[in-house]
Length: 148
Image (cartoon, rainbow, N blue to C red; front, side, top):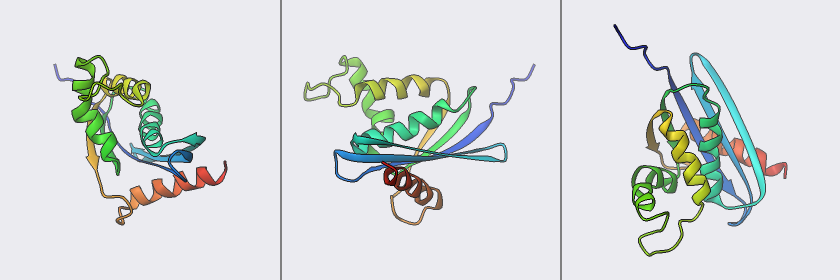
């Protein structure tokens, strides 16, 4: 008996702020099965890191079943946080190596929970370097911020 192949999707995300903290926005693209979905949103008072995380959370919440996901972002905070740092934070009761509470703990917990439902490959790309989907996500984030 063969296992049912898991469907795959590509997700591209970006978040930003005008000031940090300040008004912020995020954009994401979900591509799979011949379809593309673009999403964007904003918050009148937030941080860049919160918007980067929110973009990934919003995109992953759109997936109705387990997927093989390639998630591409220009946020090293997001990639390193979810692939490296989170394991230590969990072991230390959501404290950093310097014994400070982890910033954005609730978002990290939500992202961790969502990431368990999928097989995610996290990919970092340099921002504002001509990556077409990253540039589009940046545009979506800026459009969302402009509507605040």
